[in-house]
Amino acid sequence: MSDTSAIETPSMTAGSHPWSRYVAMGDSFTEGIGDPEPSSPGGFRGWADRVAEELGRTQPDFAYANLAVRGRLLQQIVDQQLAPCLALKPDLVTLSAGGNDLLRRGGDPDVLAAKLDSVVQILTMGGATVVLFNGPDTGTSVLGRIRSKVAIYNENLRTVAARHDAVIADMWSLRQLSDPQMWDEDRLHFSPLGHHTIAAMVLDSLNVEHTLQPLQPKPFPARSWREARSGDLVWARQYFVPWVLRRLRNQSSGDGITAKRPTPGPVFGPGVPLGSGEGPLGSAAGIRN
Image 1 (tube, one colour):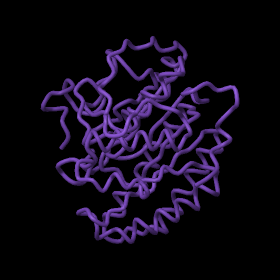
Image 2 (cartoon, one colour):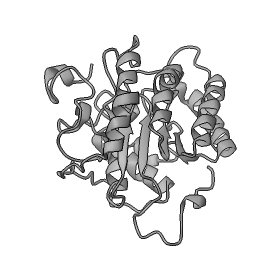
Image 3 (cartoon, one colour):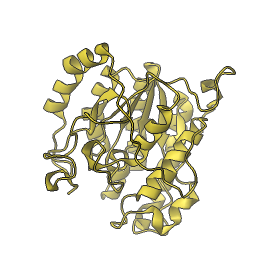
């Protein structure tokens, strides 16, 4: 894991941090599948939302976008999410990709890591702090058959992180995830408690003090949305929304699904876009497939 001491400053108060714009890239893990919340964009909350909620507590101008779409392979994430991520000019990016590839026959952890290396290089060249996720230890789960590939991929990711001064969110060492209550009933995605536990780990990896307590998921915050800065709105309309409407389409379990938070904004409150799904939040059209 790379040294994260550079992201700390002596003048920072407890819980504060240097980031103001966070973009999450990935698949169903980052979209938040397994952590249903009708009041959240797309009907799911997830670890990324929970991280953003904590980061937004101490940063008044904090904005968060989540580009993740379920079922996406690494190349699809690169093709469909990298350009819009860069257009949003984030100073913090989380990237979890490759898990769906490893589940497929022929998924090569060395090839995947080499592809991810160039993506991380591009993101860090833009000045963003990049957080990469290694895979959890699947030895006791239904995914046990890919444990060796996950272990190889994890070591490769550590090399990628070291090359580009990225941060590793260490899922393999998060032994709490071996508890069945951390997993959704489908045994493929994490439960609300699992997402909560992962969010705390991510914040710890970033050296950010937070209010997430072990085994005590926080309820969905009931707060008013900060009015987005006019510059953000203009930029989102001009560059990002049209791209999402044209590009976030492919044949997978994410067919017809768009990013749940395509426009950066504050974390809480009403008035957010519908995001994933065709109907109102919580309707039958908006549930996962």
